[in-house]
Image 1 (spheres, rainbow, N blue to C red):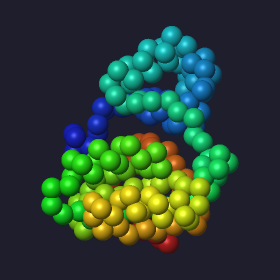
Image 2 (image 1 turned 90 degrees about the vertical axis):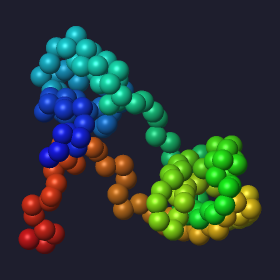
Image 3 (image 1 turned 180 degrees about the vertical axis):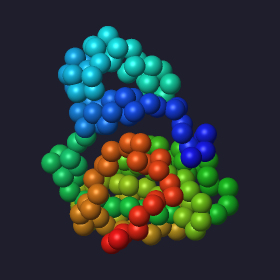
Image 4 (image 1 turned 90 degrees about the horizontal axis):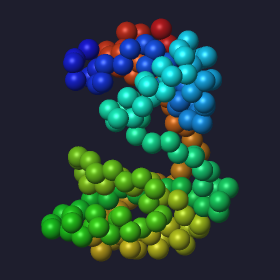
Length: 165
């Protein structure tokens, strides 16, 4: 594994702590210490250090969009040409329906995840984007993989075993 792939050089204990925090960000330092075999002050110090280094970026509540009146999730891919980038990025930041937006390479300049109330609402979102470029939309029917945990196995590459073997 290259040095850059190792990131912040977490030791196995650091990874154990991160996995537990990903499962439950509200866990107390005392309980986290019990689970990983450290004292409460040692856990607090290590967590603070991971926050300062940018390894831990935030603690959030995960909300179910459908339970708060946003039953439709869609991905909108967008291709742009010309000098619309600054105006489009400013516009995207004002659109509350967009919960994630990534700028990428290839045919699609942007990939956005949106949560909306209805198909009509989705149509309105698309209409607000089309002055800036071409869109292609896919509705989400369900989730196959919900937020998987990041751990040391994510750094193991190449994969040694093939599916089905």
